[in-house]
Amino acid sequence: MDSRNEQDVDKPSTRFRSSIKDHSDGSSYGDHNLFIAQDSTESFHSGRRSKSYMLALCLLALLIFLALPNSSEASEVLPRLTIPRYLLEGEQSGQFSCKSKAGSQVIWSIKYNNGTTISPYNFNHQTEETSDGTQRSSFTKTFDIGLNDTTLCCNVKYENQPQLQACEQLYILESDYCKGTPFGFKDYPYDDCFLRVFCLYGTQRVDESCKKQKKCYNTETQLCDIAQPQGSEDPYSCILKSDGFYIPVKDKCQQYSLCQSEVKFDFYCPVGQYFTNDQTSLCSTDLSKAAEPCL
Image (cartoon, rainbow, N blue to C red; front, side):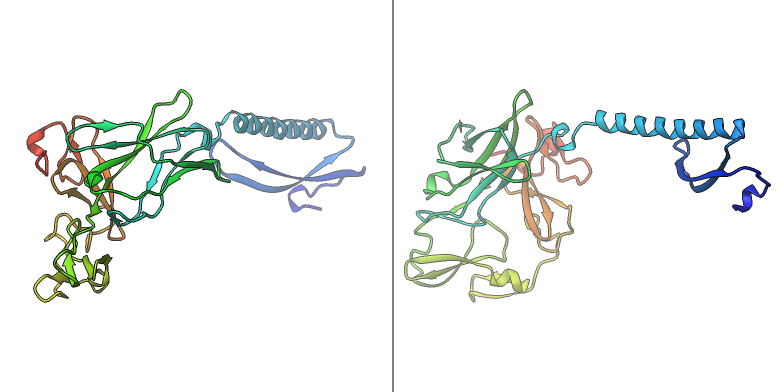
């Protein structure tokens, strides 16, 4: 018999175990061995109260669980836009995709630097639902140079919720970039000093070998022989910058990039605000604080 109940009991007793959780302070009483003498009215009612208390707790927990909204339904599924790393004029691109909540209306748009926006922009996209309750709208395209330095946006509308948007800047390497260089390397014009373009008798490909060596491309020697810059020396590069560091986008006063594993992810300030290059207060309505000129 339990040491906590060392007393003589003449008649048979019923033994049961229960685990009681005290929700007032979060502590647990653990497992208890309780004895109820069948001829003891006080113990009998005490056991009934214990059972009723546990039943009430179970019902309360069930009601709270049912009242809680499903996390996937309660929160908006922000669209996630993925684009190919490099775009070459006149060549079929890799896949563009926008992931959003299943059942959403997806509209693709293009915004030019002069403020003109074409929406919807016909990319002949295909949309398919995935097993995790989301959908993926995707397309491939052969780009012309006219779309260089434009902003591609995936605009998502779900039922009565506000429209959500994910955007990325498009940089397209013109088809005659290697003109005059039948064989050799040229500097890649849309990124930091680590990238170069390999030219081979009319074909051109972006080369990342300098980036892998953490050396800058030398336009004079065409080699990766310039020592890597300190993280603060190239304000537009994520190389050598810590994760979560924000940097400006050249000549884009309302746009900025987030560095993650030395890769840049582009973001936009709210309408009417400008990127300040301040790591704690990213955007401001004060144009004089803008990190980049507004062209």
